[in-house]
Amino acid sequence: MTLVKPDLVLDNANVITVDSGLPRAASIAILGDRIVGVGKRHAFATTGARSIDMDGATVVPGFNDAHNHMAIYGATLNEVAIQPAIAKSVEEILDAIARSAAETPAGVWVIATGYDDNKLAERRHPTRQELDRVSPDNPVLLNHTSGHFCVVNTAAMRLARVGEVAVPEGGVVALDENGEPNGLLEEQAQTLVRGLLHPRAIADIVQNLGAASDKYLSEGITSCQEAGVGGILGTKEPLELAAYQQARRDGRLRVRVTLMPSVETLHATDHHVDDDEPFVLDLGLHSGFGDDWLKFGATKIFADGSLIGRTAAMFDDFEGEPGNNGYFQMDEVRLHGLIMKAHRSGWQVAVHAIGDRAVASVLDGYDAALQKYPRDNTRHRIEHCGMTRAQDVTRIARLGVIPVPQARFISEIGDGMARAIGSRKPDCYRMRSFLDAGVVLPGSSDRPVVNGSPLLGIHDLVNQRTDDGEPFNLHEALTAEEALHAYTLGSAYAAFDENDKGSIARGKLADLAVLDRDITTTDPTAIDQTKVLATMVAGSFEFGSYT
Image (cartoon, rainbow, N blue to C red; front, side, top):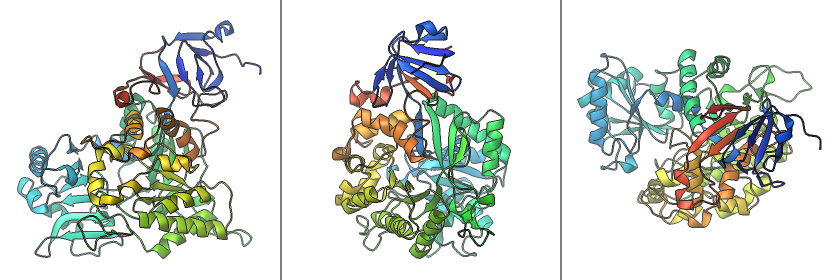
């Protein structure tokens, strides 16, 4: 094969290609934004290209987070931090809110993000009365780390008319012992409050995307898949695509993004009598439209809720809560109808399903859609796929469905999940089971629910231990090579990008991460100590000091 003359060569590197044809290499030749050669050390020394001596550093394909919330994460960087590492009790949350309220003009919202009732000393949510005590003059919104709950104070409830207006389908306004709202809003009930705060200005979203991009590059992320453009769980962002386009024009969107429009943004439209009834964005847009930097992927649908919040739709009751087996966020007939319409109109479909009852129902919907409107290589997805029965692992493989679990959940929220499901833990966040069934497994975080660093996710895929040090599902652990494959080629496959991304091979995009160690040979328990030295996107180092 004739070598195209490169303009840049990375030499003397430990290259882990994630390419079965050439697993290891020492040199990478790059022309523009593409890789034009991979070989031994000094393989391209005579080409005349500029050469960088990598001094033995490990080079891997750029990481690809298959399920994250980039714009939301960027927004959280400007909100009051109440993550478990910062606020360990309800009182510490209240102290943080009091400090913020003291610096905020009366009537202006105080927004805090990241608490987890499972990790608070009191093992409960804060209440509106407690928030009233520390912030009587400012509406307050506390975002749960899962995104499936929020807590508000009385001032916020008045603005949202909680108790006066109907609760949206798939949501719950929690009540106290007196039958009064206690401030906790579950699932779609969050719409009541979030409707007051959204949509955001395009300029604000652009700023948030820029801040997120900078963080992602520092972690070796070169691509991500945005799970819910247009609004999720009570947010409405009808101009969010315009914000992504503006961020790209302004040079603030510095990683490649696959956008997953919320199913609420799709609609039927006029069409010729010879065409199938479309369920699309305007002008007939559906999965695949776009370019290497910004394109449409699957459409996103919510089936159920959260494990740690005990709202996921389960076959059996949650541990210690007789009668509570969670719930769907919409009627199953409607859920299956949306899947059918989106599938028929050419969409890749991605449904949030965490409970085993929700996973089974989504598979029913996919099966029915494929039988009625056969289509090859749909790669329909189940986002999270948190609880999966053995028989449904087999169905996932048969239907060609891609599960998108988050390994980082195991460490950060695994203890809470284990308490919620008890003896059913072996069904929780399967990894090895999917690979053994021949299913392609991507790597993802669901950031900002948990820390989105891919190296932390890889660590958890391999080690399977909670923050308390308890083993989670050791039988589901992957090798470091398999975990790296998930966060690179697996994620690329989930977005139909395996021909351009996910491995270091001739013709693919020059998107790379440079690490301070070989994560496939280092002590597995030390993978989370790995540092990203540099990140390359489109043939240019966007993070790090290589020149």
